[in-house]
Image (cartoon, rainbow, N blue to C red):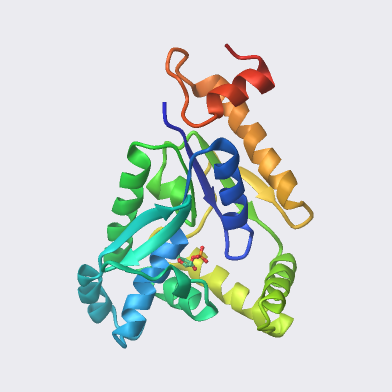
Length: 246
Ligand code: DC
C-alpha cells in the first residue's frame, strides 16, 4: 500500500528540510514541487519572457518539458533534457516561479506530472496546493508555517553561511511579498486544507517537527491502512515497533 504525505506552507517555513528528513526516515521519495515551478520560471527567463506576459507564458509553457529523476535519492529536475537543478535555488528563480505559477497552463502541466509521480509510489510531496489540489486524498496533510521573523532569520543565516549575506529587512519584505502572491492568486492559492494538521515551527527544532509528522502519520495509518496490505518503505516495521501493530 503506497502512502502520500502532503506538506504545504509559505516560503521559508522549512518544508523542504523537513520533507526530506521525513522521506529519509520512511525510505520513500521526496518530491519538491517548488523546484518544478522554478524550472518552468527559468525557461521563461531564458526566453526573455516577462512574468506579466500571459499570452507568451501560456504559449512557451507548452514547449517546456519538465521531468524528474533521482540521483542517490536526490531529486534532479530536467528542463528539456538538461539538468537545471543547480540553477533553481536562487532568490531570482523563486520570485520568477512565484510570479508565473498562477497561470492555469503552467499549473495544469505540473500538477499532472506531480500526480503521476505519486500514483504508484509512496511520497512526501511539498508545495502550496498539494493537500488541496494535487493529492486531496493524501493519507496525511500538514500545513507547515512559521512567523515572518523566524523565516527571515533562518534565510538570513542560510545566505550568510553561503557567503552571500543580504539585509534581514530586505529578506522579510521578500517573504511577505511572496506570501501575498502565493495566498492571493486566483488559481490554487496557498491555503490550509481543512483536514491538514497545522504546525507552527517558529519555536520548534527540525527534529521536533519531523517527529510530530511521523507521530501524526502513525496515528493516521492506524485508522486508514488496509490490514492485509503491506505498507511501503519502512512504514510496516515502524508501525510494528512503535505501536505493536501486527
Ligand atoms: O517552495 P518554493 O519556494 O521552491 O516555490 C517557488 C514558487 O513556486 C512559490 O513561490 C509558488 C510556486 N509553487 C506553487 O505555486 N505551487 C507549488 N505546489 C509549489 C510552488
